[in-house]
Amino acid sequence: MPDISVLTENSSVRVDNVRRLMPGEELVCGLSDFFKVMGDPTRINILWALEKGALCVNELAAVLNMTKSAVSHQLKILRVAKLVRALKKGKNVYYELNDEHVRIIWEKALEHVCE
Amino acid sequence: MPDISVLTENSSVRVDNVRRLMPGEELVCGLSDFFKVMGDPTRINILWALEKGALCVNELAAVLNMTKSAVSHQLKILRVAKLVRALKKGKNVYYELNDEHVRIIWEKALEHVCE
DNA sequence: ATAATAATTGAACAATTGTTCAATTGTCAA
DNA sequence: TTGACAATTGAACAATTGTTCAATTATTAT
Image 1 (cartoon, chains in turn blue, purple, brown, red):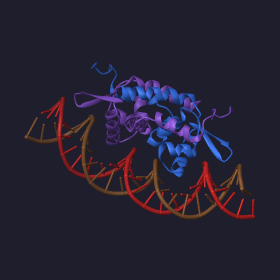
Image 2 (cartoon, helix red, strand yellow):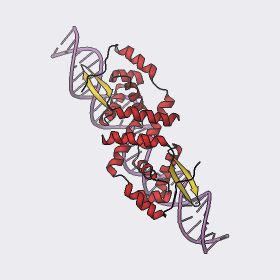
Image 3 (tube, rainbow over the protein chains, first blue to last red):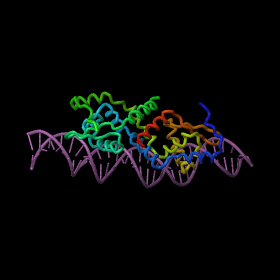
Image 4 (cartoon, rainbow over the protein chains, first blue to last red):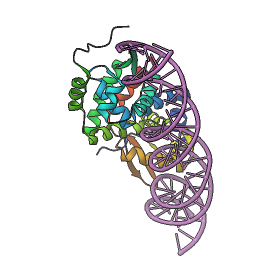
């Protein structure tokens, strides 16, 4: 275990320096909102299922063993977060992954979890 | 906007195929717990502050304009999730980022949020 | 030992979240 | 038009979450 990073400056100087580099509230909330969407088992399952291809609400409900209503509520959250997109096809609504970042973040998160 | 992925097979076959590829509950919870930890503005701010170097609880509280208690509670969550580590130095406890994945995930999440 | 400072802890509270349930909208087939 | 099926919606409920407050532990200096 290496020693902590060099602490040459005194505390208040260090605090001032860090304070200057802090992000705005807008960015912080953007980031945390994004992670919040990923921070739910049901939504993780939905994203995982959609990684293999588009599925409609009925199919997702069957895969996850959940009610259509519960799945639909979660899909709305994923849709607003732009992680999935909806495509109407007759009576059904098919959902797809919407973003390439998701796959990469996914990969890195897996590495962390499985380390 | 491209068409949805090819839906050659019928619905129940597709459901069965996807079901077979679904991850175990353990992995799903591991992933969602990880993202849940990142899904809070205060913890995002803490991680951001620590990206520039180690800081003790007092300093973090000053940077974030929060009570030591509130910061300490959040640090515990980050510590349990192995995103930071604590290093005692006299009366103070300094916290550091603990993981390289964090920086990469961070980067990709930023790309997504700022798109 | 005592005082002072740093950090942690647990209980309590308000706020947020995910699922269920019932009702509703929208689309296709008869 | 009617009936059946797919999906969405809103209210309600229990469960979880983040901060505050007060009390406690731990370390240093006098």
